Image 1 (cartoon, helix red, strand yellow):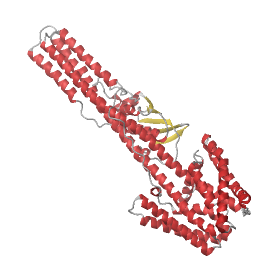
Image 2 (image 1 turned 90 degrees about the vertical axis):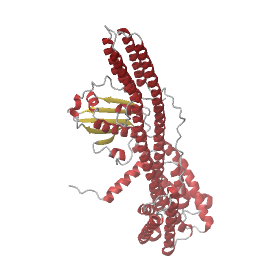
Image 3 (image 1 turned 45 degrees about the horizontal axis):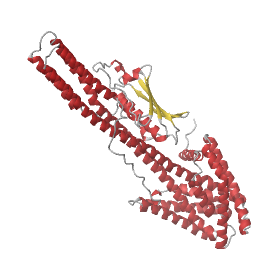
Image 4 (image 1 turned 180 degrees about the vertical axis):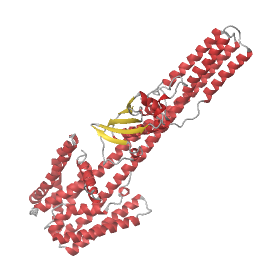
Length: 593
């Protein structure tokens, strides 16, 4: 039996997975990687060896700038192709080949331009310079690209969820208006039926008169039933447009999170090791690495202590100042231990704080993306639940009125008509008929008790159909099982999580719901699928984790599928008696224009 991988090895595998995901994402070459490559190429990777004076160093930077511009033009077709390739493997290989080609070609471009325009002699040392370029491009640029991708993902996710929230807010406004119109409609309907009943009781009461009144009650019931089955599309919400949350501009310093000191040190030495080795051999590498690691951890302690209790901008300033201090320390070590001079000594002062800034920005991007997505997802789920409850509450008085008119009032009419078929009614019979019908009218106007049940699957599907084109396939046994409140609650949670993911993680506008019963009717298999692509390391989010171990999220072709097994602890309830209601409330998709 093989031993489990060490923690360090597992972390290395995770980092390699993130690195590959970044280079194969189709969003590697962006304006941010362009900017980072320009800064590195001009300020850090210029061939400063053997140069004297400010003028020669500026000429070397100018040559690096021109070489960088040439490379940008050459890489531009690669950036276009990266976005058009459908295969992630092809995209990743294309980016790797491009970075290798740039690492090899850039020193030659630099020397050719510097020699032609400024008369500089070639510094040689091709292997060291190629290695330095390769290590820089393969470490710093993926970090910048990952940071930019996290910020972009957070922005896209926020936009999708905000759009869904806007639809829900509009829907809630329509539901409120729908409920107000229903209240007015019920008041008018009851007043009309009461007026007709009073006219019946004030005139000649016989079988035909009572039957005519019963027909009027039936007609009123059907009008309310039509209203109950109508969509909300035609309901006008005059509450005004929903105000969207203004985009908040976050200062640069506020985005500088505390960087991981080990990561900063490793990145710096991956890029600088070839030059450091050429300058002082292995002893200089060991000494400089040890000193830098000590300075990095000192800076990390300073950031933790000094930044405690301060706002994000001041904490960011402390992060930047601390890592500038690390850069100054390395410059001092260079003065003491090496013969380097001139602008070369300034490189650590620029590079180390810059790397720390990139690592800090990446950490901030990851945290902001997760926090924002978590907050908006919770808000979306709560808003959907509230809209579901409000819709059910707005429809319940109509259903109650239809039920009372169709059942109680008409049944009283049938009994009353039978009694007056052969003789006039007695005063007590008239009084009883008035009391019974008035009781039903009062119950209609009072309405049903407030409902807080947000697990009504019909209502949930109707609410979400305003966002997604929902296709539901629920077998007959599952329909019966869903009468159990606990089962309905669990299935509702699965449906909500699946639909939230569909909106949050892709531009999907359609979702498929399937609820099927196992052969022994001991469990339900609930699946929600929508077009999209899974990203990340497979760690479940809070919503998926809340569904327990029976939940599985997987990729099937171009579909993301959420599957959850819901046990039927009361699956013997397939014999539920629903005859106490004439009809189920209508299942109607509520679609917004």
